[in-house]
Length: 541
Image 1 (cartoon, rainbow, N blue to C red):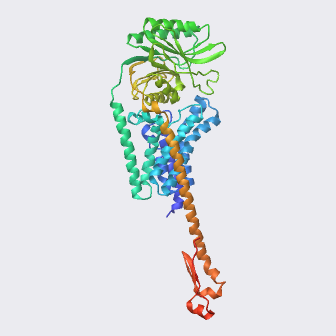
Image 2: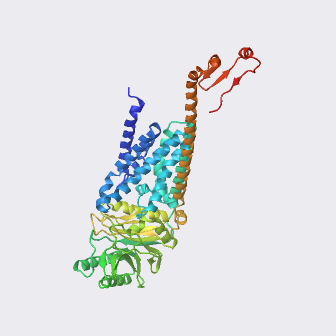
C-alpha cells in the first residue's frame, strides 16, 4: 500500500492541475465566471495535509498554468518587454503561494476563521498594492471576471472591485477551512461567518438592483470606426470617414440621441488640419442640437496629445480633455494631461475620459464628486480584449454610481448604467461600422465607494499584517514547545547512562519519561551519619 508521504507529491500535483484548469478557464480575456470561484479550492483543500513547500508550490503552479494563455496577449498585442511580462504574470502565483502557506499555518494552529480570512484578505491587499505600484492602475483584478454576474458585482458600489475579489477568493477559502481537519466548533464558526457575509452582500445587491433609476434619462449613441487607422481630415480617406460620421450623427439625432461619442484617435490632426475636423462637427452639433465627442491625436507646436473634444449642442466653445494615463510603450510619444475633471459645456452631468483612464478608480470618483453622472469615453481596443475592457469600464460605473458610454473601436463598444446593466453593445471587430444607442439615467446618487474610496482595500492590508503576526507568534510558541519536549526526552534517555557513573546513588535514581528524581533512603542516610536525608527534585528545563 502506498504510504501517506509518497502520496503527498501526487496529491499536490493533482490539486495544482485542477486549480490550474479552473484558473485558465475562469480568468483571461473571456472568463467563465463560475470557475473563477473554484480556482483556489483544490490547492487550499490539500494545503493543511501536505508540507508547506508542497502547498506553496502547488498554489503557484496552478496560477502559472492559469495565466499561460495571456503571454501572447501581453508580449505580442500589448508589446510588453519579456521581463515586464514575467513580472506581471508572477503576481498571481506569488499571491496564491502566500495565501496557501498562511492558510495552512493558521489551520494547523487551530484558527479556521483566521485561515478562511487569510486568502481573500491577502489576495485583495495584493491586487490593491499592485495597482498602486505600477503604471497600469486597477487593471489586474479577479473581480472583473464577475462583471456579468450583477448580484455579485453590486458589492463594488461599497468596496470597489476589491470587494468582488474578496468574495471570489473567500468562498473557496471558507469551503477549504470547513473541510480542513480540526475542531468542529471552529468549522461551524467559519460557516456561520460566511453565511452572514453572503446574506448581507445578497441583501444589498437585491435592494440596489430593484431600485428604480433616479432623475431624467439621456439618450446616448456610440459610433464605431476603422479598426487600426488614424486618419487625417485633409486626406481623401479622412474626409470620407468624416462624412460617414456626420451622416451617422444625423441619423442618431433623428432617433432621439442627445449625445454622440466617436472612438479614440479617430483622426490625427495638427494646426492646419484641425479646423477641417472641428468646423463640421461644431456645425452639426449646433444644427442637430446634439453634443458630439470625438477622440483625436492633436499635434500642436511639437507636442502630441491624445484628446477627447466635446462640441456642445448650445454652440458654445468646445471643451478639450487630454488623456491622463497613457499606455507605457505604445503611447510614449504622447504628452499626458492633468488638472481637474472636464465635462461637456452646458451639460454638467456629462464628463470626459479616454480608454485607459478607466483603469484608475480615483479619476472616476473625482468626476463623480464634480457632479458627473455619465462618462463619455472614446476608446480603442486590441481586438480580442474588447469584452474585458468594456466590462472594466462597466465596473467603474458600478463603483461610482455612473453610466458609461464607451466607444471602443476594434473591440466592443458598450453603454452601461450605474447598476452594471448593459444597455447596448456591439462587436466592432466583426462590424467596424456598428452603432449602438441607449437611454441612461443621469440622477443616480453617489455610491459609498465614491465617497470613502479604498477603505476596504486598506482594511484588507491591515488584516494581512495582523494575520501574519498571529501566525508567526503562534509558530514561535509551537517551536519553543517542541524544543522543550525534545530536551526533556533527551534528558530522560540520557539519565540511565549518566547514573552508572555515580555508584552511591545508582540504586536510588528513578527515571521517567517526564523527568527524573534521586532519593536517598532514610536507612542509607542513617548509616552514613547524622546527615539529613537528601531529596533531589527535578528542575524545569
